[in-house]
Image 1 (cartoon, rainbow, N blue to C red):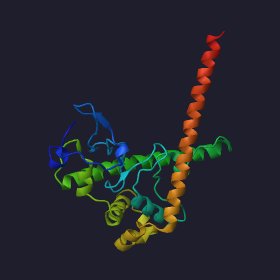
Image 2: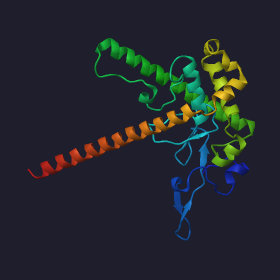
Image 3: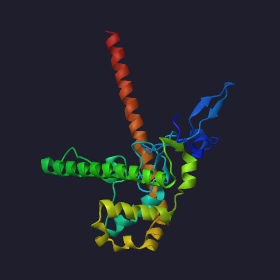
Image 4: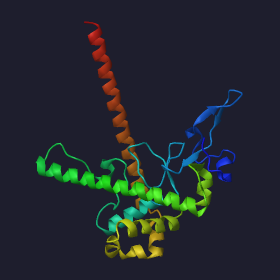
Length: 246
């Protein structure tokens, strides 16, 4: 494993996820032991299967791709608040899958509807590219603050150096908007108010309910995907059996 050469990369293994989610290896006596979780500074991915928030680069996001999001809970809530200020559900397309962002290409509706939908998908993908670039920029900025060099660091050490908080998420979101969407500040002047940003990152009863509904929807979509894959394998197997019996 590559190392940053700093104390955090060589400390005793500690976890940032439930024990059952950790990658396992076998020790010299044959017993299973948990491997240390590392953060890849070049990709923002963790060895545990999580990934770093694409806005603040501090929170870690867990989910089943593609039915998950790019943002931690604090940044997700803040983006929803911005979306409500604009009369919608959210501002940034933080869902990994287009359907989580309300974007898709319909099978019906004529060429004009399809072309408009394709334009929406392309715009979403362009914003995803901006988010990836912003994540890389924030990861490198935070790494430089602590003089971190190398490819990987201990994940929990990273969170100790750069803890997630409504304050940090609010200012990261503010910098992102100022860099990539400066016109938004004129529409939502609250973005210049630090106290408003911090308050907007705090969970409300509606936020908790929305999160539960989002997780239920993601799980249902994932289950449908698994069932569809199982059906495909079953049909393929049955077709092979029929051919072999001819």
